[in-house]
Image (cartoon, rainbow, N blue to C red):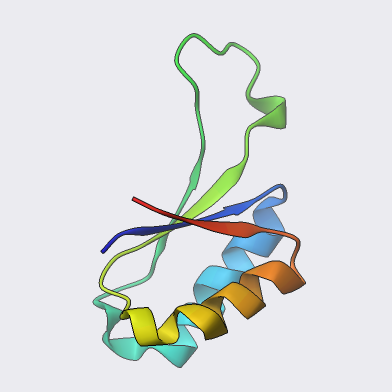
Amino acid sequence: MRQLLVFSERDDAEEVAETLVEWFPRLGGVPAVVRETLAGEDDAEDAQWLVVVEGLGEEHLPRVDALVEEREGWRESG
């Protein structure tokens, strides 16, 4: 299942992506860090940063949630 980890700051998103690679080397690569864009939005200054994670088992979600919350982010399933 795809997980979206949402952050306000790029540095937080990149640090979490790096931590996930260390914790779960079998994810199949580095989680993607992308800027959230909304249809018709001209100013991306306030857009959130997303870490897109594929293939993370549900048993790992509590640990990931704690990591994300430390950096004032949140997780969305999609």
